[in-house]
Image (cartoon, rainbow, N blue to C red; front, side, top):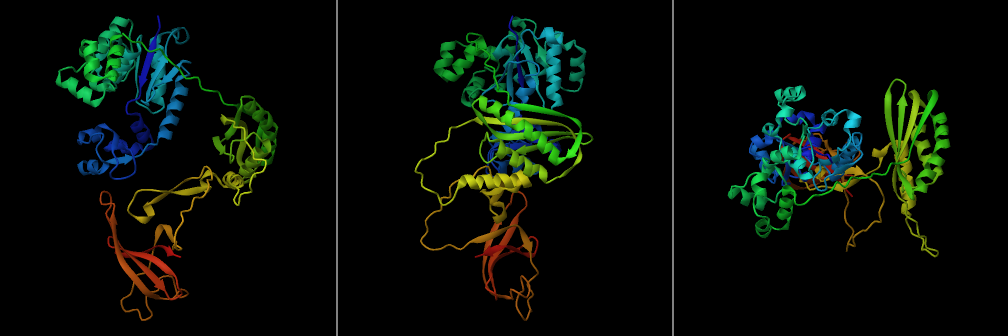
Length: 519
């Protein structure tokens, strides 16, 4: 008989956030859609819920309910990377793993025939659950026979839904004593599984809000009560989405497992005879491996977009370096040049290298179409990208960044530095007259106070630039009232040497600052 398992990592983006900020566990915490006060709250922890904060509420409104509310954005890329990492971890226990589409943190697994490897299904489930917990996640695992039933039971973590045979296990008694009701649940028969699934509360499932509220008003609060409703009536009243859920819950519709089949990237492992601390000799060893490594990638019709170099040191342990060419490449000379730039910065490594591991991030190779009579461009973006790739290889990936605009009040908060991945064509907007350029300091520079009775005027930048001869302003600006209120009075101060400085007086700090210069 087929065995199916479902593992649910509840509020997955919030778990990622709290792993990054473990000190926030003792405070109300939330994941917000954007880093602005009006951004909606997407996920909250129990402490935030206890403070009457709900999902969908604006961050500023949540902060008015709990002054200690901590919040941050969890990017889609970060979520996808973690889902892929967990799926890879789950494949150690079963080769067939399906991450849920549109519901990050939910995975279905094929558990058929694994008792021969792990001794029993219970031991398999316990080992898998322990591995997820060791990775720092809270998870609920159910092993049964039906895809929907295992999903529903995993979503409902009430201890009252635990079968009696499982409650007799020593491991469960210990977990229950600690309040951990996410102990894996293993059903022995489909009947037992179906009975437990009928008791699951509807609000634990992904029902449309309007349908869920209407069902609650009708007194339908569990899966069993929902399944007992006539199918045709459910379809007419709530639409095809709820009708499909009814068919899944009643067993009239079964959905087969559709596991992912990820491509295995090209990998190499070099075990050195003796610990090596000379970077040149390591580069020479890599020069022997890189050409056949790229040939393997090319044979799959792919190109190398990123090379991860893992070094196992004798005493210092593992160290990882990332090499990214300007564009996906299959040219060994280009890749070796970037490796050489990265490793030459340290001629003598801090410890002897015992092992080198190479892992490729591959992308589909695109045949480049070159124009026979192409017009020569004034700016060669590819040459610029290659130059920036060399800079990153020599100085690190954080050496090349670009400013990204942000929605904020204070000038220094209106942009953030993000890694520059590729160059694009400049698209300047036509203007009728030349514009002045305002150059900002990332952190405002403190200035000496303006003396009231200074005979030679206010000296902002020393004697060379001379005193301030003209001041325009003030232009008041306030913000961050929800966090740390700021009230500034901005002025344009012109010095005797002709410099036009953008300064402000901070009322909270009772001090002048230099924000930037106007050219």
